[in-house]
Every structure is written in structure tokens, then in C-alpha cells.
Image (tube, rainbow, N blue to C red):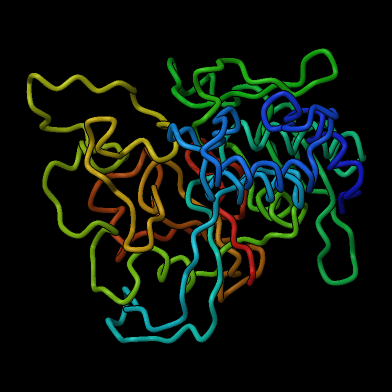
Length: 342
């Protein structure tokens, strides 16, 4: 597990130019106090972390996340209550509140994790296990009382023999640093991460992967919906799955090819239709499928991902038909969303 002091030191340096209000080259509680005072007095807006053109309480929360966790992840509060089970249609109960990340984990956030965790020997670079690629980021997974080496993430493009073109972030280890090939994908969801890698990422920051019922609750609350936003129609403006680009108007130009899109891309400000859930969670369906905490009921060696990625068909990505069972290996359309317990 991470050394908290080490993490704070690294991220204080990284963000000192952005939110270091008192110019002491560290990000700490003093900067948070000055930031709140700046908000109350309509002061400077140079620490606008969420990019909405305003310095407000949302930015304060994100700075607190940086100080506490070394990772700027925006969370949405999910209240306790019933949800409609997609399979049976029955109302089931979650009797606790929790927080879930508003967006899928991005390449930027995953790069921050990789470059920190390797310094602490929590991860290392080695041959991929189970022939999933050539070079991987590996680490230990504790199963019962045993530590088992697993491949967390595929470096480079393991699919070069299958895809002539790819539209998702490719990460490599270059000059003793993890780097992304194309900076245009920095705010896209990280993919090519295994269940074990997603689980390690979450635990590294004292978060966890969502349970199935939490994921459903965050996706539609107590409503009986096929998609988080309701019905179909104009799907190319709402969701990043393979069929969402079929039958589009002749005058419509799609910015991204088959592959990932920036997290939270489907909003009105991007001339799209908002695809957030009733709680304000984006990309529950489409973009990247998301690993769940639950084990397969038949074998704990099989893992579950939910939501459908950019290569899924539109109707296979409904909240009713959204699960994929696998051995937890990385895939070009499977990524991460995390939960923080209250």
C-alpha cells in the first residue's frame, strides 16, 4: 500500500504551480483555507480544476482529494434506497450511502498511479502472464493467504496484429517513465487494464471497485430504464458504442473514430445529448466497460465487467444486457470506475 507522505510530496510538487496559493511549493491545508477565502471574496480563478470557468466548492473538494489521496477523482453521492433489478424487475434495497466516481478513470489518472506505484515497488515491468501481450505491468494479488503475480496492464499496442487503426490511449515505459503515445487521449478512459489491475488501482488509493448492485443503483436509481438517460433515439448523440454511429444524419461529423471518447464527452456543451444517470454519473453505458468487485457465482477465477465498451452493439449495452464474464484479462474496451465508502 502506498506511503501517504511520499504520495503527498509527489503531488504537492506536481500541482504546486496550479493551486499553490501561498507559493511555498507544497499543496496542503493552508492552500485550501486560502482557496476558500478566495471563493468567498471572488478572488482569482487559477485553481479551476474542473474547468468550468469558476472557482467554487467543487474545486475545493478536488483539492482536498489531491491532498488526502494524491489523486483528483470527482465523486458523486449515491443515496440508499431501492433499485430495479434488470433481470427480475424486482425492487431491491441498498441500505447504505456510498460515493462513485463521476467519470471513468482516465489515462492521465492511471499514468499518475503507474509512475508513483513503480517507485514504491508495488508494481513492476515483466513479461505478460497468460499470453495476453509481450510486456506488462505486473503486481501481486492476494488470494486467500497467497500472493500471486498477475498482469495488471498491457504496455504498448497488443492488438497491432488485429487493428489497423486504434482510437484509444496506448501507454509505454520510456526513459524510466510511463508515457502515453498520443496526448490527445489523455482524458479518455484507460483501457487494457485487467480486473487485477483495476482492483489494485482502487485499493492503492483506499477506494474499491463497484459491486453490481451499486453500479445499477448509480446507473438508474429506482427507475426501470434501458439506459441511464431513459429511451432511445439519436443514439449517436448519447452513447459511445459501435452501433451508435450507424444511420447518423448525413450532415453529422463525428469527432472520434471507433474507440474511446473523452470521459463525460456526451454533454450539451459538446453538441451532444447528456448521457448522465439520474445521479449525474457519466458513461455508465458505453465508452469503456467497467470491472466490478463481484466474483462470478460459479468460480472466483471469473470476473465481471459491466456497461459495454466502445466496441459493443447498441442493444447489447442496455442496462438489461450489460454483463460480460471473463478471466479478468485486459481488453481494449474495458476500464475502471471506483467507489469510495462513506
